[in-house]
Image (cartoon, rainbow, N blue to C red; front, side, top):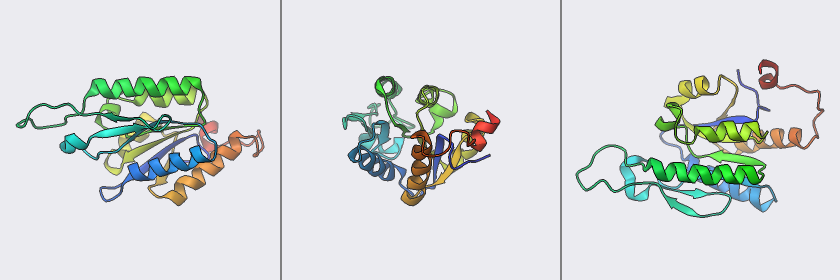
Length: 188
């Protein structure tokens, strides 16, 4: 069940799309308009690109390395889970200090297993802060299961992301009647 006013949004992307650049620009624009945006957005693309696997804390602008050097002959993902969790703790602290939106960089293998940054989604929603997370199209079924179907599916484009944010921020600002119930709220 999807609802455009749900506070949890999956920005679903295909192999040929770059959710990272979209989310960085979106966060930057919201911050310029005075919104408090917390979260993490990847700047590298895959574990294979280990030297480029990094992310930016959108609330501080700090760039973090998320890879570990396993040597020249190592295969597989080089994600440094410790670094990822440290970044998650820093995002959690920003959530606790107050935010208008939380961005989680990926719903990846770690998050599918209930690890990684999955705890940030619950933490933000518990504080009634909207969340947008980049979800690869091949993990959409896992995402729906994780979110118990209580999220909106967004196309990976700025117009769709802006439309979702405008609806959510207007409702959260009280500009939409308080007794208006979204589909997400009906099924909670």
